[in-house]
Amino acid sequence: MRNIRLNIFITTIILICVGIVMIYSASSIYALEKYKDGVFFLKRHLVFLFIGAILTFFIMGIDYRLLRRYAKPALLFSSVLLVFVLIPGIGREIAGAKRWFRLGMFSFQPSELMNLVLIIYTADFISRKKSVVRNLWEGFLPLVSVLGVVILLILAQPDLGTAVSLSLVIFIMFFLAGGRLLHLASVTLCSVPLLYILIFSVPYRRSRIMAFLNPWLDPKGSGFQLIQSNIALGSGGIFGIGLGHSKQKLFYLPAAHTDFIFSIIGEELGLLGTIGICILFINLLVQGYKIIRNAQDVFGHFLSLGIILFISLKAIINIGVSSGFFPTKGLPLPFISYGGSSLVFDMIRIGLLLNIARSGEYP
View (cartoon, rainbow, N blue to C red):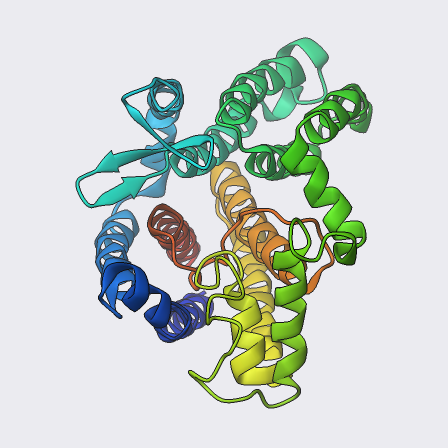
């Protein structure tokens, strides 16, 4: 397990270093134009990286099993934050979405905390209810009720992508714990009409779907971002046009340093650069699977499973959106995209993985 921990640590460090370089490359001109400071985003990213490092080493130094004791209070606390962020004057609204608290010069997204807390709670729930997870009243309904409340709060922000992603992770965890497919399928089928309404009754979501199907129907509107992303990836060729030489970051590609940083990597570092990033995430998944398999207790097994599922899903969705395989959704690329809350909690997840792996060295 020591080699596994070292492998994950080095892989994460490489991804973080790539992120530092690419955030500066993708954001410097935009930051200079908007804030008169070319390193504006880089400096903030480094501060969050420092905070994440402190929390990561702290979480590595405790017994992860202690988290079970605080799973329910943490769930309640996170739920209260999700309620508060919706209150005018407390939560910060950006482009019609109320997802952030403003803390001085930084913003905090409580849904990022909930993403981690709900996985911890689900792992604890499964470890306590392992013998009755197939039971509708004792196993399935209590967990799906908690998930339902959390999803409603996240949808109220609104943040459909996070709601769907988190639901998928929790459902997979429950299914692999022995939950009945019939129960999961029933809830999923009942959710389809609601999902349809949530997508097609909201103009910007509907336009995203239309842009995904054919971005050239509205090349200067809803399809603009996807078209510019494809141009960036296509322009890079095999070897890229060179680090720092991206043209799409020159106010063509929106969110170049956040949600679409993978496209800038493809433009500047080419196909080889994007393949390298994919290999790093695949390696993280493989090493994570080894930790899941060797976990010494049920809680550690399902906690590591949820962590790996969530990180992998975020990476797959981000890369898929940038490449045009999925509709546009604002999920950052783990460890690489600019985004304080996301970076901090992704680092905490890695700290928990390393913690669980270390416990596996001493059966």
